[in-house]
Length: 68
Image 1 (cartoon, rainbow, N blue to C red):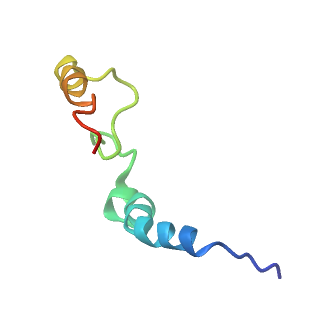
Image 2 (cartoon, rainbow, N blue to C red; image 1 turned 120 degrees about the vertical axis):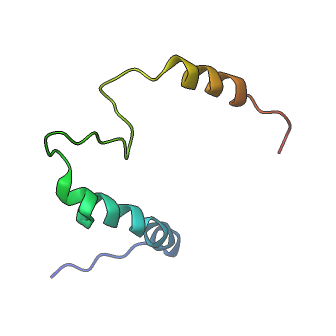
């Protein structure tokens, strides 16, 4: 059997992200993905363009206001 080692930093990232992985793969949400009649906005909707108001809000707030 092959042993795989990852850095402590990567292990920490995976540990922090584990709730997201659980949600996406084993939760009630994951079991129901793709069911007819369910609108899935959990991770966005790549099939539609974003609403104009959302794009405008991003345009207003994405520019850094200071060095921090």
